Length: 423
Image 1 (tube, one colour):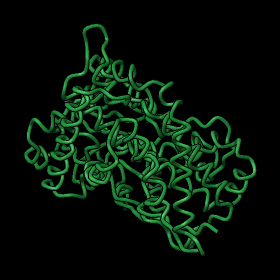
Image 2 (tube, helix red, strand yellow; image 1 turned 45 degrees about the horizontal axis):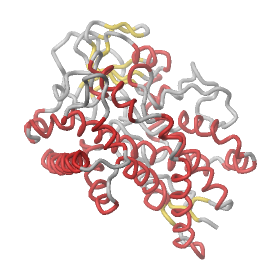
Image 3 (cartoon, rainbow, N blue to C red; image 1 turned 180 degrees about the vertical axis):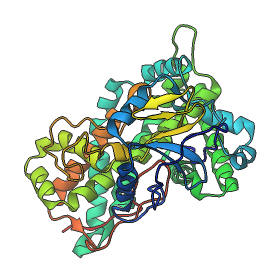
Image 4 (cartoon, one colour; image 1 turned 60 degrees about the vertical axis):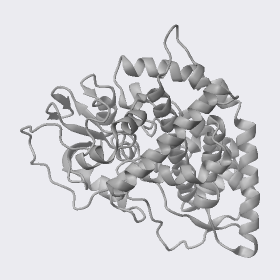
């Protein structure tokens, strides 16, 4: 399932469990820097650790940069068959046809299926198409900033998450795919459940999944009958010789693009702005030298990226990573949030430095499953942060002594709210 938070063990194996478990789970830490601190505590015992997740599932969490990068390209680290690793409670709650309409996307696939799907989707989701969005992204940004200025007049605090960070990428991706404005609130509600399934009962997840798939199937049928100038219409029509996306692949890819296309960018914009607001020297430097924005976005992705781990994978054979051999049939989680602060890779990794040269982070995954939407996320991040800083030079936290709260999640690393004062 897309962004599955429940992964059961895929077989009984004899493993070395002598590693010291952390005193807290980074996935359930929701206050301030506690998540990063928990990852650092875990990494202190070694870059590869076997832990029990908050869902009760055993998994290998890889926190070292070199080890995570190696894991992400290892031929014996694979994605399980779509739906095979879903917890029984969720598997039973979701009808088979709904699961099939959500699971057939390339993040769930291994070659050659992954290669085929990525080739077809890339033919429609081109870099030229992304670059052409820049004027519209700027227009949406300016309109949202006008709304913030009105809401934050006379020093009233405004929430950057709900007032700016969320509506910008959701508007961009829904317009790109051709989702009408009247359905965006429904989509937001369904997406919030699907992306953080572990905090919702199975029946709530099933309701959201069924509603989302129903909407996507309806949209695909409408656009097949009357194609429009949008990405979903192009995905329906894309061909590679005689090959094209099936109905389940279409709905699954649309769902992946809709959810991944906004959730991660919300976290980039809001997490990045929070990092800058808590490092006023870096904020002042960026305001004075806006040409640093591209490098600043890369450093913000490294410092407090939008995801904690990549989608879980499974070892198809024993895999040696660093000094540890992970047996076959084990769930593995490359912890990119921790890897991006690995002191073995980055000098002073806990320091935000937008002048840091050539930042090579793992925030967008690495290798086969490198994020197809990374160029769009970077573009939105540059426009959003640059415009926000330029429009409100006195922008500051409304409650600087209060630590922000993050959503509990296996996958995402996002702020629930970010109250600020504009002037």
